[in-house]
Image (cartoon, rainbow, N blue to C red; front, side, top):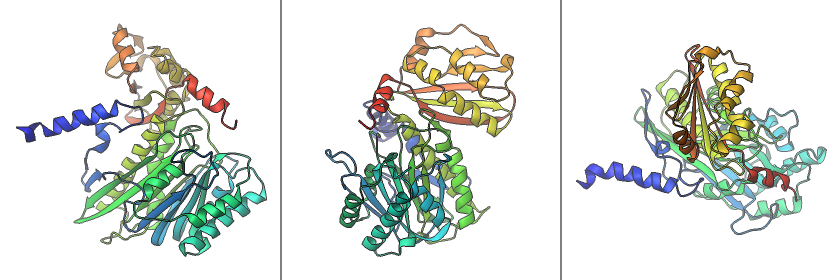
Length: 441
């Protein structure tokens, strides 16, 4: 009898834990096994960036950030062997020195490591910034025994301040890496984040298995085309350069580029993916079952991390998910979803649990997407507020209760095509203003 009810008991337990804190466990659906024609994909317990074979990481406190219990601010990610590596970077025309250096070294089949700091962005400090970024790479290379050109660099934090290189040098020299060091690295890249963001997925396909792991940071200055955002992804699958580049772009387009916290982006945004091939087995080739499974797994991992970022938005109390359906094309669906989730008025209404659906329809109307008023329907959760362009009677108190949940679902039907898209964000609170009015003081 116990075995019969075990799945239900597990679901109740996970949901109960999830309600304890806005940034505790994600929903149960984030942990299910995904089946496809290509293979089986499952989340790894306590998964992180070092879950794939051959990756190690570590972190330390160098003194770049304000000292506190458990604070880390500098870390290293290392592969035992060279990796096929690709990256995507900020769309901001102002680019931080680490972004410039890493862009110069990619694409590559020889990358071994990434060195990263938080607390200082190393952005808008002139030529010294580039010298300091290169120095970080050289110091890390010396510490872990690889060539300087095999090391990429990332930084996050306050713009316009030079890196305290004496502290950075000391920190790099004392940093050590290990198989379980991914958890420390996830903490070391945090700035205003309240929790680390990390996960890994295992893929079983063609009688073989590979793992994709990742960590991310981001809580403010988050908007499509990346954000104040770092993400490091690793895999032990053997992946070719061209396919890895395309796969990363597709995954980012359905995940990180669909998150908006506050409409701002930074000079430091970086997403890196490293593939070392140590899982063995067949390589991931375009058009193969492995390629399909790899893409689906990378998408799921990035969506998981993207939702964690939205859930942990500065001052946030609610995760907002906007699903748009019936758009003329995928670009229009994505634009509509991003515009709604990024609207300050929509965010403020949700923070106040105000069922003001006019905020939603006004946002999509200004998005630039083709709309026909008489075809639009709007739902909060499963409650319809607008049907075919006309307001309908709805349970106002029921909608208010839904708006007070930790996760708020908005569904917009355009009824002009078949394209769909989903975007994530958070509510806009007084705490957001407080955090960003005191960021450097």
